[in-house]
Length: 288
Image 1 (cartoon, rainbow, N blue to C red):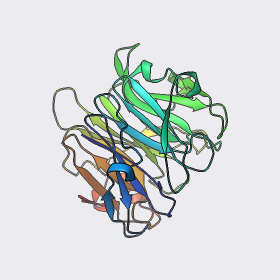
Image 2 (image 1 turned 90 degrees about the vertical axis):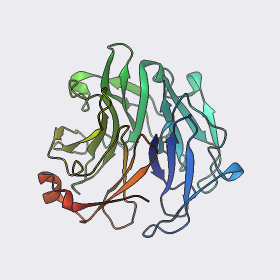
Image 3 (image 1 turned 120 degrees about the vertical axis):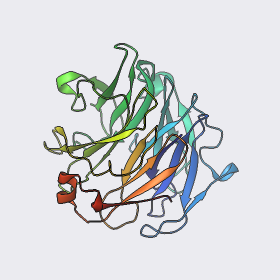
């Protein structure tokens, strides 16, 4: 499997990538090109800030500045684990140290969700990072999308679970194992949602896309015709959304169960027509 997350790990102004893998140890790829013409090189040994880190049977990472000190931290899910790694290095030279127990703002969350697939994002537009999880509830024995609102601050987070009507990601079931990605797909200033969904019957996975028809501070997600379903998929779909080619729009990098990565390039700066109609001609898929 492969489960990508992107962020500027070395402070040079372009996006690097961390890819979760089977076995639990993520792989780190430095962008040695530029923001508009990326070239990804695998880091090994002491050059890899995630060397020696292993999470359960597989790792599902997300990156974000959890403690508001200006550099990227990491949250990694997988199994019945949600581990927090604080960057005790710097913007340009990260050093990740696991923070556990009550010292972690995510303490206890991993025990409630199996195969937790985390995403950090400012869901309610209040300037701090909230937590969205795809996974399997150990309480209700069902796949769900979970939401923990940061009711603290950007530097001292405090996560409170929101459920049912208070959870904008509560869709009442209907999807099997879900890996979320958040980004402004239609250029209207709020976060939209893409889910990589895996069926339980070994059939190929599929994409579900939601437009935020609410606002940046009060999101309401509506399922729409899907621009990604024209592309061949396998199982274990794990998307992330970011401007990977520096052209001002949001692209998608997607991992799949057999360990491959596919780059979905947005062909339009703002592609609301293609987004609404599910027109896959707005996208080009390549393997980086």
